[in-house]
Amino acid sequence: MTSEKKETLLIVEDDLDIADMLNAYFRVQGYEVITVNWGEDGVSTCQNTPPDLVILDIRLPDIDGFEVARQLRSNRRTQSIPIIFLTEKRDRVDRLTGLELRAEDYITKPFDITELRLRVRNALRRAQQGSLTNPVTGMPDGSLVDEHLMQFLQSPDRALLLVSLANLDHFREVYGFVASDDLLRAVSLMMQDTVRELCAPDDFLGHMDASTFLIYTRPANLPALKERIRTKLHQSFEYFYSTRDREGGTFQGEKGLSVQLHELTRQSQVFRDLAELKETLQNLCRS
Image 1 (tube, rainbow, N blue to C red):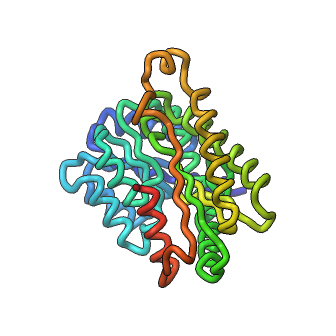
Image 2: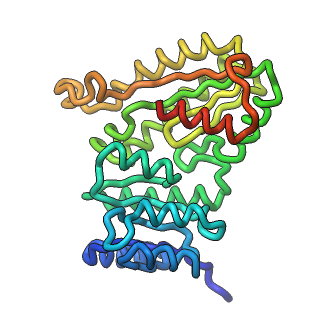
Image 3: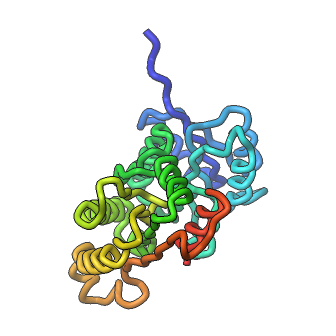
């Protein structure tokens, strides 16, 4: 009787203490673990024996983690391997670079090992499901969203509404990934209720990215949707802060959770193909 194949993690980390700790921890969790300390070794390891997931530091002795990710994404054999950045670099520009390289997660040191384990589990589950559903909310993702974007390109009487959660990174830094996931699940339930109330049965709700929802509907539904979502989410955000943080102003002003809404119709812009439409939507997500 053959045993079930273990999932393989590649850890690219030049801090030997951290590398050894992660190696020992994830082996106990039932994973096969490979550790390397140089960026070039990480690239060659992935090309020779592709792992199921890469945990990647950014500061490395030779090429940095961003360059490792670029090389992996540019090679057909390695382009779909999930990457989780684990780094001391906290600047917003570094986070955005990580997202542009399609990283599954960007985790800053010091980190909670249990939360890292959950992020690894979710990323692997997402990869196994073929990017059909979001591992946190269970809502449609990936190719299921692409199907509706193609329908949008072919249907002049349809519209898209992007619903982005702003400052989710700050919330995650204060409360951790578990609380951030709880927030996303709660928001997804509120979004589902709103779409169910205001949209037709053949309308669609899914993920554009981890913190952005996409609604495929009719243009006439947009005003009511935007008003209901804005009101509902803004009223709920306060409940996710601790009493101390609410009273101390930790999330006041530009640091607080907020919702950004962007609508797109065929009348407002013409798109050549799916790639151009997705690029436009991604730019809206970052704006």
